[in-house]
Length: 199
Image (cartoon, rainbow, N blue to C red; front, side):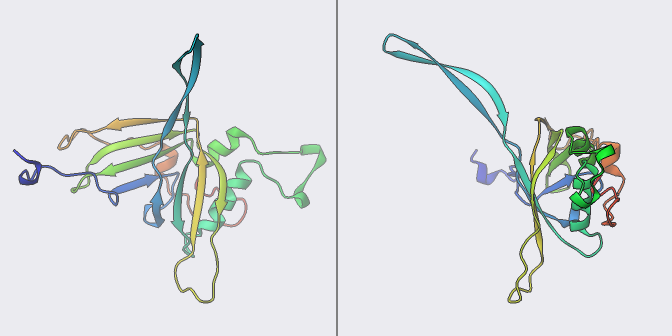
């Protein structure tokens, strides 16, 4: 039987997904790149032959885009993550307690994990990606333009150590999504400096 006559055949759709990131409201996320990886290759030469062997697995950076509402204030919350990771302005420098950004601070500020869930037509998960030890590499706070009445968008670029994939069988009711505790509590408040931001 051909697939177009089977009503049960349903492809994954690019608009059916939710991103879980340490209290960030899901409705402000407009776009996200899924994890990916590359495998290195090491050649071995023998006479006029070359044989290749797989090397390290490297996980590719990901990014997501959010709109910037007044409340919650995405800009303030993302800036707070930078501060919570250990960044201090030169005017706040204290020689007795000099502080720099640490991996632990950055990972904790982002909630240790990010989950990306693709859904089916009735809202059940089809696959769940878990991004481990995420770290911000850059943020673009968007452009302002008198000739543009659109929303301000923020692009966040991330590196991470590794990702895992969990697939779900369509119709399986045992799919309860386990979101880390720090990702369940809504702390995305957009407070001024000193707030927890996403974390």
